[in-house]
Image (cartoon, rainbow, N blue to C red; front, side, top):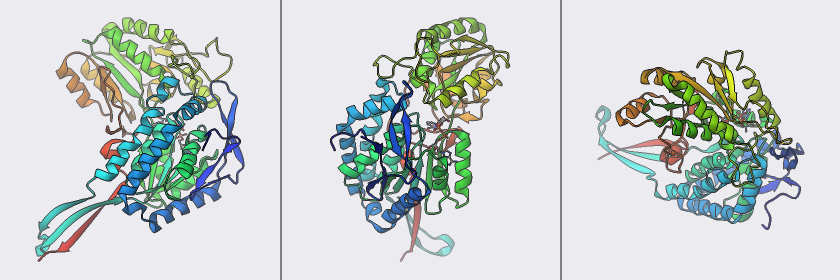
Length: 490
Ligand code: NAD
């Protein structure tokens, strides 16, 4: 394949073939310029039906599920093929997702592609069978063994914010485990997924039907995938309300669900921390990719006695970060994905005064950007943890600063959220850090700037942030069933 960039519309991948959608095409937009980037095939119920049938048939009637060595070969081949297109994929990811260029060297592109090798290693080295030994339940001498097997057909439904990371964090382990996949990406980033489908079809040995990619601007196509009885597992990443809808749809067939949902994570600055450094770090983090990260810490908890000082330090950092062209290597804060998303952030900011709060810095559209869905890095102060902006996921570069009285109060506020996805603790005293990290009910925690993101590190949420873990061995095992075989001994 010479160029990945579609001349016309990107295709669907169904049963090994690159095909158009019966719904025509839909537009994909560059959020930094508001210009049309291109078009994508608009899959409908008919194509989703064909994709599920292809995945079912590839699982039931080929050796894919029985051959981990071949699967490892295919995953490494896909990794190499994608790496040969890295520059082109980088340009398209920046244009379609509005992802700052620096992130495409890490979790927005290069990292997740390289992580396909981690999945390949798991396919080769995983202990698929283990011996439970002999026992005599109810007097019957029995030799028991446990076999781990692929779940079957995986429906993977993904959002737009870290499209490659999330697509590959599902495709890698699902395929390594021996499943077949129907991938339904977000309507805002169809190319990021469709181009992977093109590479799979044209540059790998992955058999027809093992991976199917159905882009669509119609959410019902995702709902159809979630409710189809031929699907064995729905692996969903997206908002909590949609996750609940997916769970309801899957319940009709008792389909297993794996959910990575929203977050409203707390960044706790203990009173022995370097306050300025901690607040600066929190402010910088919430601007990365314009705050469009489920795991970003968006509630900054600071000692009440140093609240004013913390507000000042945080505002100084936020005020110094200018939203900019994501293609520039120094840009941290690019655009929001869409006008719809910017409207949503602005609706949240409009609630601040009603809740008795004030916007310390930011709060509007940057004056120096007349195109693109940009919003200024924003600090909200003087609200309680019950304010709308402190409870709900905003998905923009908006940080809410909250005072606490002592460590127990900080833990209480951190846990006073329907979510439990991530968070951070900064301080010096190891015993206090240990206590706070023990007590916060969340799936991931960063201490003093530690980075939890890597292929072998499980990631996921407590409470309404999800069910299950992505990445690592735990993430791989989400895609496995367990079979116990009991053989009469002697
Ligand atoms: P969304 O929930 O609107 O959509 C996610 C996907 O679900 C899209 O592909 C969409 O087309 C599809 N969809 C919509 N309605 C559906 C339905 N009824 N049935 C099946 N599929 C349906 O989320 P979004 O706006 O694309 O992404 C932002 C959200 O994703 C945020 O809430 C963010 O926190 C969350 N997110 C979570 C993680 C995580 O790992 N926990 C990672 C990234 C993003």
